Length: 288
Length: 319
Image (cartoon, rainbow over all chains, first blue to last red; front, side):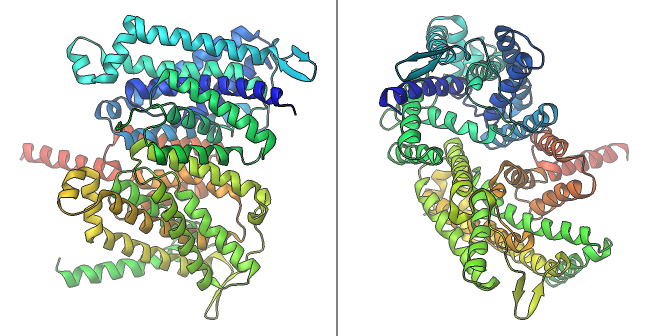
């Protein structure tokens, strides 16, 4: 396994991590909400895409749209149930309720899609490129390109549009934002729908890389935590950088040290950073 | 009720509780359900003091539960240690792990604390599934039957007295904790950290102490679970036990002493006697958890209390 190959793997993985985590980053940044069902949403969206492409035989772009719609819908349903807790900022109940949602999604997906591992291909994942002994698929390249575009558009929307402005105002002070005429509830709905849609979008692109299982959500979500915390809570640029760093770390650790203990190693990094800087790498000194 | 009468009533209830399984029919399935209720309730009480008294959500208590079970399995199979030694070993590992985790997360609060404890659970699961010392994905088998001072417990009916005693001791510990200085300090730290500091409590030390109290409780539940199941594997750190614990802690009512016990009993009885199959059961338990959190902020107890108040005020209007 050459160094260059691992570098490429790490970059692809890193963009995948960043894209999977972006919904959470925005959710946390704007609504100060957390979603422990995030991993299960990823799993659900991956299975929707698989079902659309495999059993239904639909084209890949249609599968993406279906996944995103399901993700957004589930996000809206979750936000609807959390509304009172959101307004009271009852974080303890929110965390437990989103874990409950994850558990329901897990049970429902296992019931509908079965417990066996599935694989699906897209026209891009079947097209490989070999340069000497370096191997990459068009799907991998698509992940990188799509992630970069997604982050650029998102950054633009947050910084330069009315919707982004409303979201930033709610993030700063929901009560004052309400007074200045912003429909805070609508912003909360929008943000949770975005969280669901974004992770579903990510799942449609990333899931073809590995076999998918309905039980994968529990562990899947951990990389998102690490990206969000290391990137500085709620920071879009920070989570992009953290995603890439995490991807490179996982690729190299997995290839050269031990693939079985990658999660443990990533966790050690997370703990070290948190002990030194409880607010994450991007936090200003004295913050949080 | 005077103090003496209250004590007599509690003793009577405790004695009556012991005979519940035989009153319920006393079959193998009944005893097995009751033993599991006692064990899982003890496990949940460990988390209860963190959620209800500290106001934090620890997602690592499955790991404390599992470490008690793994230590029991290792000690009893490798060194043929008896239940007393494995009990001490379980408490020790619970304390050690809570100490390390408590120190590492000393400055973390709210969701960052929960994220890290969730990560601990996933990493511990990962390690247990891969490390040969812990039996990797096969788990550890061949745990001998529980045998202490000549009492041998092979069946669930024979394990019941031990499980019930463990439950009573745990209830007493949680009750005593809530009336202790530490219990009061924990509530202050939860609702008003500056006030806690003014009254001479260091919030970080209080949090660490409560953590050190809570972990051995869950670990001791793991100790008995190892004997009950006779083998230990990584699945006890999975999402099922996590959701079971959280449901037990919030569904009935927070800081209501019998809450976790009733919560666990509802779940275990449903799964054992009214099951719709594993996946549907997990949808049911998840929906109950969400339903209670969204519609009954005070849990079932709070809901009933408000209902009673409404009924009373209505009957007041009519008279």
